[in-house]
Length: 275
Length: 323
Image (tube, rainbow over all chains, first blue to last red; front, side):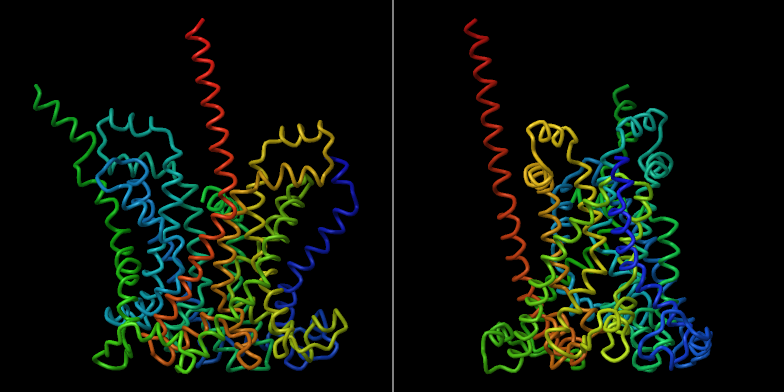
């Protein structure tokens, strides 16, 4: 093992890979600090020659492209969506994992079978449904329909299946009903899984593109990903402004990721292997 | 006495309705936004459905028949989209299967800072397609993009073929390879070290270990990655929408782009719904074929082993009985 760690080839390879993965993100950030002219210089510069916050100034004061509002919309929608997913999936996952009742296998089978149904077949009917509910062009369209996904229920059920039966038995001996048992005993033990699901649901919702692109219309109602494409239209060749928008949209998820990367990676790994 | 016992028992396990109460919040959303739309979508696809109009004209299977009729209006658009989705899937999936495996094998080696590098290679995946799309469109610019400057080329990556496909596949690999690598890595961790030790004792080199230990050990993971990667590639939308805008001359306009433009921009929802079901049917066929191709041998082997085991048990039993 030590021999491998001392092998210079390993470190050269890792250095090249680091440049490939981080380089583009760094250039995005550096470009946001350049002047419009420098962002189109040939050959391109790496560091900004005369760093400026001009792009950020333009973005924060552009009334027809309210990036603050988009940011707030994305934050509100992703947070509420993630909470909704965790609450509904924990309740359902617990019932499916630890309770006996008629129709359990049929319900679970129906939910799981939709894991392999491609999401695009729901685009037209859900658009019409939201129209009927009066939810088009509101954040409800971003928060609620996505919580119907089967992954969260599957993920929580797997986790509850792995907890020892003694938890519930001792709670029952103490005279606790099913809701008390769930709240006081099972949920505290399910914290790691719930945090993982919370983060995964937040990231997915924050980044979602195709759905908000078609169900949100007003400038003030957009989420960041859709807002960014509006910037692309409004500042076609002013790349520092577009890159500044991309930086603003990436920072929250990158910061979140730095703090909880272990949860994200383990969540993805367990979803894949046990799926 | 019996009554109190019964009362206590039902309180212990809760009312028979309890499980359904736990399920209700999720099922309410699930039924509203998955079950009902799945059926409602078929109903839409049987109509000339325009959501701007009050009443919809029933067409029967016309929307589906149109997709087989070369002279119909949606035919050329739809099959152009299907062809482009097929090109992208065939071009991207091999890279998305192989490169992440290599990356996972690298990360499976023990070296200091392994967790840090694992986190870094996954980082692009936590960014959305809008961010990475805009970023790469700038980096790939034909006149002042840094990619041309690094490779000393003069390629119009976003407006010339086949370079547009090269760019879209490359960006997708860069963006999503961390995801598959993490799943591979978990699969690699599940292969018992003894298997490698046994192979080493038999004199297997690294290639034989890879072919006879690693690959068979990864089979379930490989099935999962194959199916999800093909589905994800067939769902490609954002990269084309942002980086090439479907061009040049609609040559990178994918099936999903065609469907959403028809249904959600031009509001011909019946035809668009029919197209989405046809695409879904294709994907279901591919997934099933994939599953059987990769699964069958393993299952057959397991069945054979189980049979042999049973025979052995029977024989020892018989031997025990006779003795």
